[in-house]
Amino acid sequence: GAVGVSGAVFVTTGDTTAGESGAVEIKTGAGVQGSGGDISMTVGTGNTGNGGDIIGVAGETTDAAAVGGEVSITAGAGTSTDATDGGDGGDVVVTAGKAFGGNAVSDIGGDVIVSAGAATNAFGGAVKVTSGFSDATSSGNVEVATASAGAVGVSG
Image (cartoon, rainbow, N blue to C red; front, side, top):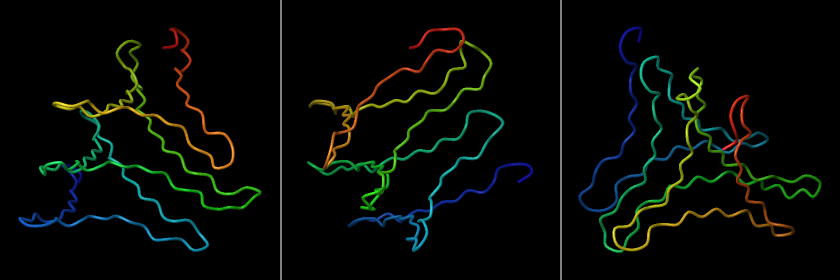
């Protein structure tokens, strides 16, 4: 609204005391002679305070010998087998936020933080980075690099 907050949207399933709670599924339909629809999540812009977050948290479990829920992001497969130029797999892109502030010391870009899970008694989780396998030729590269420095400074 002109003054105050805009409305909120909540999609929830009910709790249960015996059995599984319901699922929430957001899905677009298949496209015939066209592409499938996108699913987009965007947090609105504010002019006071920090920007809003997008937070995804998988479910925890209290069951013995069970595993907490997985967060899985998988890009789309390119399933065309055309020999001239078949389908390519989609990318998974994770990019931290750009800093537009004018202070050359304190206005830094956001970090990309990848952390494995901690453990109370056994080993902590591993961080695994693996290139793609090819049925026919070479596997993909694993590249780790720092960006070039700006007008003043050194590359990290």
